[in-house]
Image 1 (tube, helix red, strand yellow):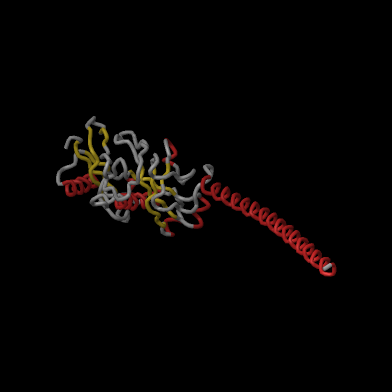
Image 2 (tube, rainbow, N blue to C red):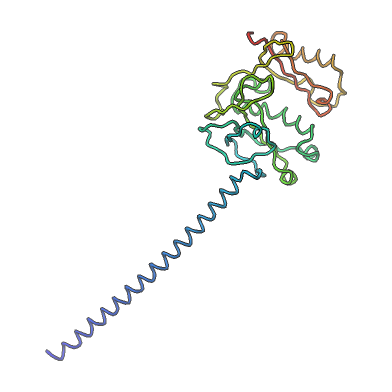
Length: 276
């Protein structure tokens, strides 16, 4: 019996040693995994902060156009900025601007620069129909803007423009009286597909003191290649255009000037009496 007692005791001791070593290995492995987890989490946090900084830096502009349906709560002069700045908001929160579509400017125009009058006219003639189509407004090519579909547009920075010349058309929410220009008015909910639900027509007071409503719009020339025909001819053509689209004579019109024409602009705004 004594000859077998010592070996049994030795085997037990060896097992305890192996168990202790295995326990220490498990502890060392757990410590390494804990350190690795902390390292990975730190990297993720740094990446997240960097991404937020890149997307939400209120001091820089966007050189990559935001996606359609991106909303921005701009106020006052911010709505008039040339480029997007700041951080987008959810469209179910208060906002004044909603990105609609991005257009690429032809090279021959882009070479003039984003603020060239010819580029601005090119944008205005194309963006308003796009804003109307996004909202599913009837007759989008000639429909006048409303309080939910006033045209806004944004471009990349000057440096970004040299890399890719794009214009982002946006729907701006404004107050209904535009006599003294547009005034941003916060709204909630996307304008996409609403067919103008909840929107109001835009009104203004004419120099003669009459209150009129903007009903339709159009072009009296597609290009500025024709020399400016003179104010009288512009008035005649504009009246004919408005009468045709309104099915009655307009109460008031906005017509292109010589400078507008030279820059490629020939758009006309057709108004009816506010009570009409």
